[in-house]
Amino acid sequence: MSSGQPYSGKLEDNFIVVSNEEGVNFLKERGYGFLKANKIFLNFVEASYLVYRGLLKVSVSNNREIDFKELVELGAKNDPDFWVKLNVYSDLRNRALIAKPGVDNLEFIVDWKRKSSVRRLLVRIVKEGVRLGFVEFEKMFRRALESGRELVIAIVDKEGTISYYTVEGVVDVRTEGSDSIEVYVEQKGSKETS
Image (tube, rainbow, N blue to C red; front, side):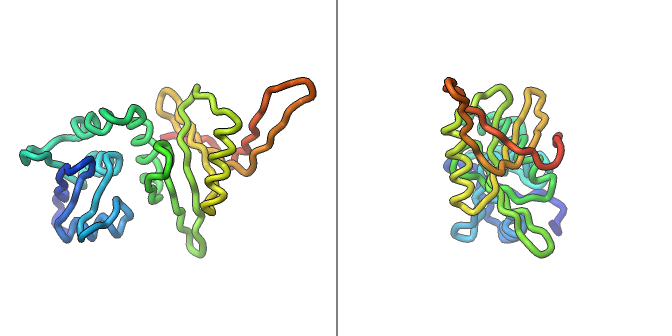
């Protein structure tokens, strides 16, 4: 950012729209939002992260600037999982990863670029204490495979600590005389915190 000032965005139809050329180029280069008609459209999670980092100022219809708290309240009004998503998104971005919204409300698409390769990930957020059935877990894994991505489960505990687990397979294990189903997840790496 050459000017040292935050870029300006305006709330329009559930997106924060950045239209000045310098801001559009800056955000596009860094993988924020999507480009349409020479403007960058940011969702509330992306915009909240950028406001928090001091890279963006957001105004509403009467040109009144809103702060981080107001923007988060707007985002959370229609999305009860907003804080959890913002927490995981911020953690991924702080690790220099580009995260885009996935098909499901609690998913991010991540392309982790290394020197000679790209590791394609589907990061699925699971709040601690939420039970996942085998069928739902299998659907997540299948969607990741069909899109050519590795499934990573981001478990967020009540304190906001995030633990990432790479899923390498889903096995339906039923013992004789039992209807219970267990899902095995192999952990790669260690517990991560935000």
